[in-house]
View (cartoon, rainbow, N blue to C red):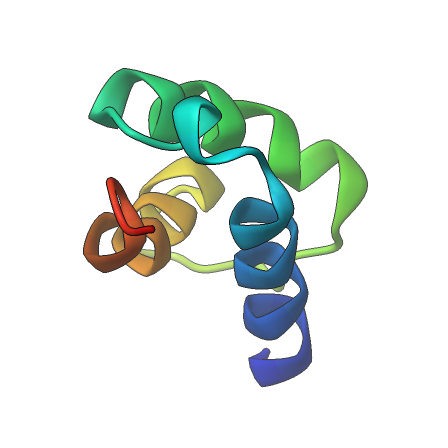
Length: 62
């Protein structure tokens, strides 16, 4: 799981600064990410919720 997490965060941080400023942009990214990365199945959270949790502290960051 940590390799997938690092890959998703790396992809997010590689986006241009203006493309990762808002929570709406993070939500769009989180919707598309499970198609690119194999996330392990979770019985409690959807892949979108997992990725949003990873991205929230990094949204709006330089």
